[in-house]
Image (cartoon, rainbow, N blue to C red):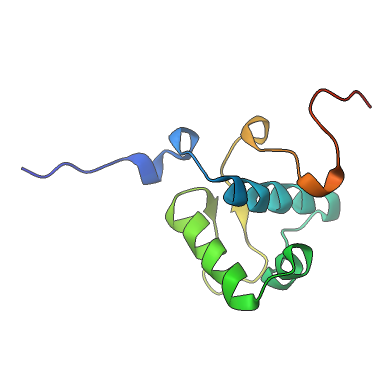
Length: 100
């Protein structure tokens, strides 16, 4: 008897690595700042990594149920994690205990 795991379909229960969290936080922040999701080239520039590295991370995030994309539609990344579960971007140099 086989059991199907619903983890991929329930992103709220998904854990993610620190690096994945930074990618998710960047995608979320970029989407809200510019009112459109980032292209992989935008992500590449921010993290200063190679195009294959960005693409591999995007595919991993999608496979883990953390983001959704529309095939063939550039700039269609949507974060599926509630914003309160996302880490603060490290480049902002803001800690959660610091008041603005």
